[in-house]
Length: 206
Image (cartoon, rainbow, N blue to C red):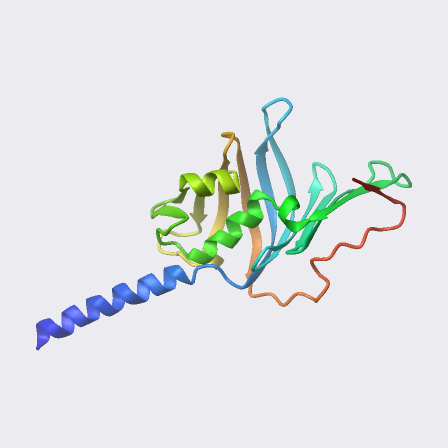
């Protein structure tokens, strides 16, 4: 009888662990961030900062204040890319496109995390410090991402709220790393939060 209880406990814990890993991504989250990325012009590491709001599926609002003021928003149907003017009083620029055309690596990456921290048809997962997600060839081509490294605040923490930083290795080999500050999950955003309304004196660019 005792051996059956032990086996049952082991099976339950294994099943619970798999369910927890599969339910990794929250419905929504919001955070300030610091970013490190490689400059496309000089190939040097540059730093930036801003904020990110996300809601599953495909809704995102990325705002950067450094190195320049940029807003990228997608509500899953339409996408907007806004660049603020360098000099106050000049025109800003906004480009609007379908969400599919304007989709970014970060949208596709976060949407894919709905699969959880377990290997699946989209990617393979290797737990560790960091936890490494390697995308399969079809997903690499579709997402433009080869792999991701997820850094947690502690070795024991594997919940989304425990994430300290995420590094994406893109298809061209370049890397982009987001360090989360004040990460909050399950945020209730307003109905129009992921719809961009251009400020006055904004030029529309095709």
